[in-house]
Image (tube, helix red, strand yellow):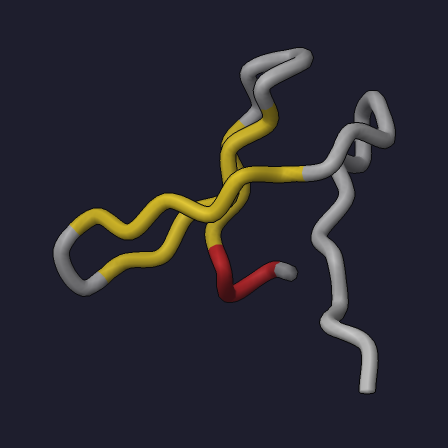
Length: 40
C-alpha cells in the first residue's frame, strides 16, 4: 500500500507536513506556499 504524497498546486513540489498545535499544515519548500490539511 502506497502512502499518498501531497503535491503543491503551484509548482508541483512535494509538500512537507507541519504540525502546529491542533492544526496540520503542508508547507512547500520550493515556493513557500502553505496549505491546510483540510484542503489536501
